[in-house]
Length: 396
Image (cartoon, rainbow, N blue to C red; front, top):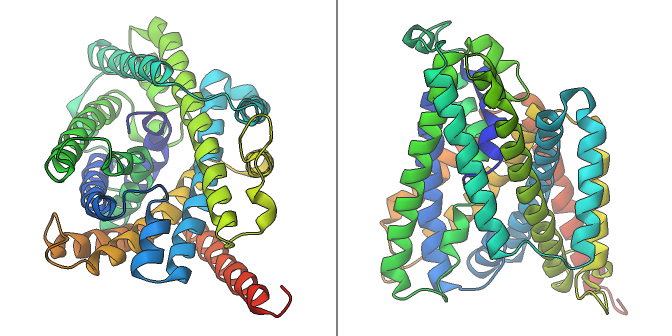
C-alpha cells in the first residue's frame, strides 16, 4: 500500500476538500478496511488469482465477473498513467510527459523480456519510500514553517461533498491492500492470520498517511498544496531543510517506477486471463515462446498507457482510476453479500457498508471522471455482449 500513491494524491484531494483533506484520508481508510475484509473472506473460499473477476463470475454470473475484470483493467491503466506522470513531475516537472512516456516504454520492454520485480527489490523500494516519507515529515515539521492555523485555513471546500471527493481520490493511495487477502494458500491458519494482517497493515498505513498528509497541511498553504503536481516535495522545500528535497525526489521516482512495473505486469496478466476465458479477444492470450510472458497483452497495455499519458492530466487519471476501482470493489462487496453465514469471516453488514461507501465516494468524483468511467463501463458491456454473441453463433 505504501507506495507512489501518497506522493501524488494529496494535491488533487486538497483541491477537492481544502482543509478537510485529513477527513478524506480517514474516510478512504475506512472504506479500504471494509473492502479488505470482503476480499479476505472471498479469497478464503476462492484461493485463486483474479480477485473480483473470479468472485463475480462464481457468485453473480459471467457478466458481473467480466465487468469487475474490465473495471480492474481500465482502472489500473489509469493508475499506470498517474504513476508515469508522478515519476515525470518528481523527476523534472518541465519535461514531465516526455519523461513519463520514456519510462513506460522502458518498463514495457522490461516486462516483455520477462524481467520481474523480485522480493529483494521490493524490500529495497519499501525502505526507500519509507525513508523519503520520514524525510518529508521531519523536514516539514522541523523546517520552521509549520502552523496549526493552516488546519482551518479556507475551511472545508465543497462541504461534505468535497470531503467525499477527497476520500475517493485518496482511496487511490490505499491500492494494494487486497493483495493481503489473496494469500490464503500461503499462510498458516488463514482465517485467523489474514484478518489480523489486514487490520494491522491498514492501521499502520493510515497512521503513516495521516502523519505525512498532516505534515504537508501544517507546512504549506492549502491552495499551494492543491495546485502542486508534487505536493510532498513542496512541503519539504517550504522550510529550512529544503536541501533534503533531492532525497524525496529520488524516493518518489523509485516508488512510482516500482508500482508502474508491477501494475503493467498485473494488467497484462489479467488481460491474458480474460482472453483465455474468451471475455476478451483470444488474440491477447498468446504467450511468447522464449520469454514466457503474454507478450501481445504486454505490448497492448504499454501502448495504451503511452497514448493516454500524452493527453491526460494527473488529477483526471487519479479520479478515473479511483472510480473504476471503486466499482470493482462494489462488485466484490455484492459477491460477498451472497456468502452464507458459515462462509463469512465478518458480519454481513460490513460488506453492505463497504458497498455503500464505494458507491457514495465513487459518485462524488468530478463529472469528467464519472462520465468517462460510465462510458467505458458501457463499452465493456458492449464488448461482453458482442464477444458472447459471436461465441454462440454456429461456426464461431
